[in-house]
Amino acid sequence: MAAGKGTRMKSRWPKVLQRLAGKTLLGHVLDTAAQLQARSAVVITGHGADEVESAVAKQTSGLAVKFVRQEPQLGTGHAVQQAVPVLADDGLVVVLSGDVPLTQADTLKALMACVSTAGADRLALLTLDMPNPTGYGRIVRTAQGDTVQAIVEQKDASPAQLQIQEVYSGIMAVPARPLKKWLAKLDNHNAQGEYYLTDVVKWAVADGVNVVAHRIQ
Image 1: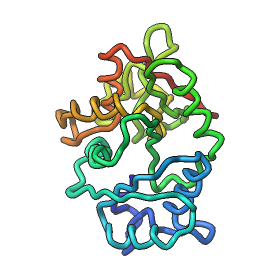
Image 2: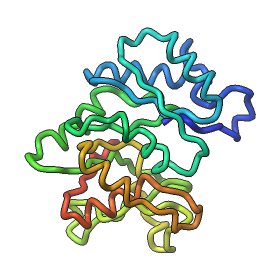
Image 3: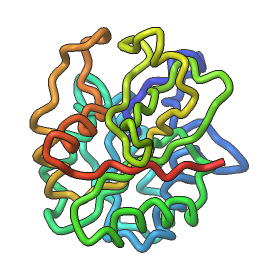
């Protein structure tokens, strides 16, 4: 996902084109994706789409890249919905944020293994514990604690849910076919009036699909 404006950075450049160690943030993410032996990468652009697409086209990650545009920007779920027409049904989709450049390929491979070794459809989330989780979606687990029941965004969380320190990183791995079905069910009936990608967890649970967390330190 690379459609955000990055308003708080107060820069003329789209957030994903900010540079770190001589390369754009998005460039680092695509380099990591290339290490996963991905069939292709779908870059979802929006704010500054022409600039972002031009910058990606000049990179040499060795990864086949397809572009789709999110116009207007109506949330993370709406962003990934734009990629549905170019996603094959038989693949595993790893959703990455273009402004999170430091995630390691080995971490993503471990996340993917949570799905590929399951023998059935499974949704895997990359999660972590934060002493101050303000602003992040909270991971709500089942009573047994071994699977995830929901991700609740900050503005929709109850006082009890706000105390949860395990949060969603913004990265997930999920088979393409059920993902497409769940994306079609998203609505914007929430505090922000947006289509949340995190709501696919609700639909996965409704379908009896295990939602697991790969919890990193």
